Length: 626
Image (cartoon, rainbow, N blue to C red; front, side, top):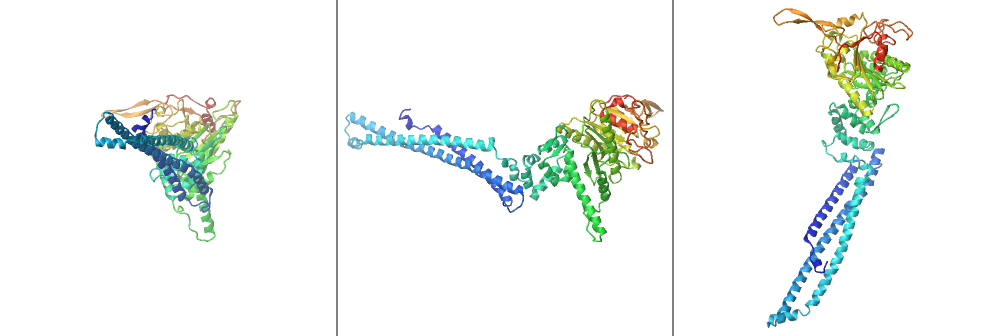
């Protein structure tokens, strides 16, 4: 570059510098905004040491650690922007001085040309005299410009270097090594209506605990949780992101710290939220049950002392006391020794479901669906006892099997006493409407189970064992869709109206439908009035609009008949006891369909475990199904 070229700074360079300065100031404003947000959060939390609690103290300490980190790049950006502007101004000054020098030089050359031509003019003489020292002045100005340019070049070098350092510092702070307290902090700065459930997963337990101390935040999250709708697959993924651990050997789920905070804050929602792990749902529902039982016991004790106590707000709600007491009894340990989980609880509807066995970890699950007149207040204990008995039956069958079953070794089982929707009373046994509604509940529950299992990486076999009116509920659910490997219709009361047979069901590929009924189950026959029979080919009367009526054969339902009459002892094993009453368990000395070691109970265990070669008095299905 010649010395004269240096006197012509490029305007493009100046325009670029102006843009760079603006960019730097914008970045400084962004970092300042982040720092301001954190300072505002710090102001919302009681001062360190004032509010007792590790959460508040940790938050203060975290913010205190981050603020200097954010202040440094913001200040560096401002300083660098100032340097860029100084450089820009220096270029302008040099350009001004250079223009002066160019004018002086042009004037000097013009005067010298006229003098050389011998022109005689008083003004030229005066100019000649004035320009005698012009060369010296120009030289002084030129040296000043040169010195300014060199100084400005060094300023530009220093500015460029500072800018690179700022960018490197910012990258290290905000991208490569973000401070832990920054993760999830965005939720603190959002306005109501801007927060979504994904913001909750971004917070750690300390942040969530602090955030929930604000009543408005707690209400906002309550609304989000209660209005998210039925989408168990998405809910399962969201819940897992909150943090949980799964033992790869046993399948046992351990609830994470953030999940536990939500359980504590919203047990009535988490306990019934489809897609949440059943370990977490059990914790939430037992939190509610334990609290209410304690309130009831305290009230009864104080009443006995004559203290005239004020009972809990729910005390006058019809049926609450009986439901709480029956659920409390049902949750006590059973004969099988299997862990119990309260996986569903709705005292208003009412409805409840108890799993005998860890439902998250189980490789084989069986849902038992009861018949008419089964209520939480009257029947939860006996329904859970039936589940406990079947758990014991399956566990023994799995241990005695010569080859490993679907349940694995040791057997991982769960049998659910399902009463999430109470069936119809006996007077409504001929009405299918309750079964249709219950079928919707059952279908959703089993789809949620499949979603949780998928999210946990648990490939399990799910099964349905229904009794009496519950067989109608199971049929309604099967038409809607059930991700199960088998359905067993015990003591069925006929075909659900609108169903032609098993071919209408939507089950897992290869799933089977079974039917179990002892020959003299007359109660089932009473309930069968007005409905087509399930077994064999039957006939339906057809009335022509203007002609005679006649009977036409209707294809068989398509279920596989399995025995319930009992079998004598033989070389292949001990005797299987006969089923003699229409219920799950023994009544009046007569064994029920789920009574221990009855043929029906053993067959159900073998169906769930996949030991179908051991089924007794079994026929073959007539009609294939989807």
